[in-house]
Length: 614
Image 1 (tube, rainbow, N blue to C red):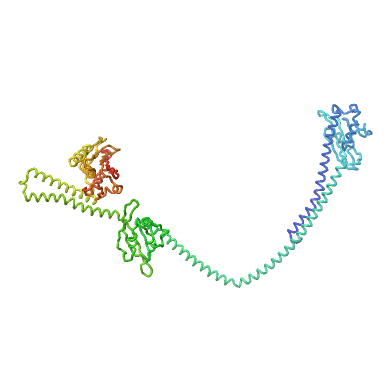
Image 2 (image 1 turned 45 degrees about the vertical axis):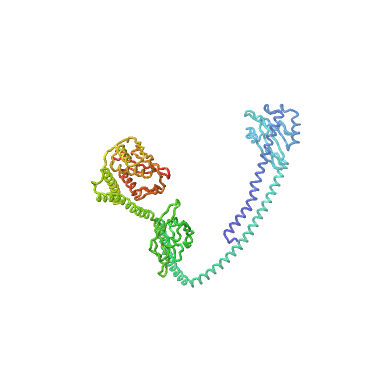
């Protein structure tokens, strides 16, 4: 045990503690108890003396034999019975004993230095005297007492002293017994602790020895293991080199795979972005008609959800009112490359036309893997084609009617001769030929205007400052002469001059008034108003005709468009409003309308004032 440093240190510390604890009790605790007992007894003596002096009235001057009353001795004897007071003496300022419970001491003078240097200076003097010891005056005591001198001071003047002897034999005995018991307990505790520590250290020593033995065995095993490992180090190193090379190859492969995957993801995102950005509907099916691909436009057109539709036969997914047979027909391989128009109904009971074009989707074994369908909306193109066909038919009719009139009158004149006709008949024939030629001229002019606009040449304007009120009145006067309607004119003066092409604006007004006369009930009122609105002058033409649907309002300014009004024998080319809008916009203005079925139509156009236009 002593050979192990830290066990030796623990044992030494335990011995020091086992010895130090009893010594601490003997040299610190026990004297402390004695001091405490003396201080307590001294305090009791001071209180006793103060009470005694006060009760007997001895504090009025110096202590002498005369002021001491005869009954003082009796009172002291009574107090001795109640307290542990053995003896009490009164000293005069000169140190003479003027009263003592031992009458033989009266008259003796205390000349000891402690009385003169300590008590006479107003300081309490106290001393513990053990049994058989000597008091402060040198007398032998038979009991353990506390000898206390209490000075009597008045205004800083020493007037005498009181000495008491209190018996503390019993208290001292109790303290001694307590000290002895404490010492025994500490010695037993220290011995037990020391014994326990020794036993614990012996156990630790055995454990350490066992550990050392195990460590020795472990070192031996380690040496044996190292010898076996050394034999296979080269094999392990070689295997490690091979593994490192394989890991490097695998890491390179994984990096290449990661790059390829990232490129694939990027390509997929690009393709998805392209598919989403394509305004046309695009879908792809495999050889069995199952849906492989569907972009958002196609999904919206066909009412499908890509998440649930992919992988299912397209023919089973489509539901009426979709033209299922038409759409499925585009998926046949033998139809690849042949465009097919598909008509789809809209929510507002309208229709949209899509041209479906198909192409083969490459598959395995160089065979077709499916079909890709591109659905491009051609509603506008088909409407324009239909409008052109309608225009050709209309134009042929519009040209045919006046030409037939002119031809008829020409044949009449060629066969009968002008001289054979009455002058009134001659004038009627000439007026009719003039009117029909004017109709033909207007039709040809409209076609030329449209041709120039489509070629990008624009409209030629000859601007000049004019009075817009005069232009409107002139146009209304001309319309009154050619129609059977009542024209209500309400014009406010323009807040400034207008720099416009007078003839072109009259052409616009003629178109608007002519349209109102075509569709309004015969004899009805057509209102024309004019007023300044902001920096423009607004002219409004209002009729009480059949009105227009929202679809007709959307297309009314399109070329060749003629809405169905339900009124028979309404003639026109469908170019009037198109040309009117072009003229107004060329002036820097705008044209718009407001209408509802059965409530008539109001159409207005704004022309900028000269200052604003400038």
